[in-house]
Every structure is written in C-alpha cells, then in structure tokens.
Length: 66
Image (cartoon, rainbow, N blue to C red; front, top):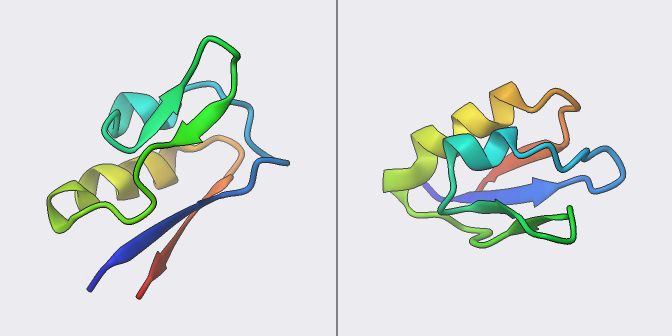
C-alpha cells in the first residue's frame, strides 16, 4: 500500500503542526507557505504522516491510499 499526500491550500493555515510530526514530508518556508516535500512518502513515514493528518486543525491534509 502506498499513500499520497494531498493538501487543500484553501484551508491550510501554514501553522506548521504537520511539519512538527513529519518534517520529511512537510515544510513551512520563510514565505509562510506550506510545501509538500514528498507526495508519496515511504512506509517508514506513514505513521508520521497519519499523525500530521489527525492533528491538522483545519483538516487540510488528506491521505489517499493507492
């Protein structure tokens, strides 16, 4: 199973909570925008990405199982 990370940038506040759980996948840069560094993280990052999805206060992160 693989996961694809999708961010709804209309909802995203770029507060960085996701980055605190999965810095290998999410990054808030100096321009105050969130960037997805890896849209299809490997299995070793799935727990971290799921935690980031759960803690997003705006529910802007969706994980799609492929």
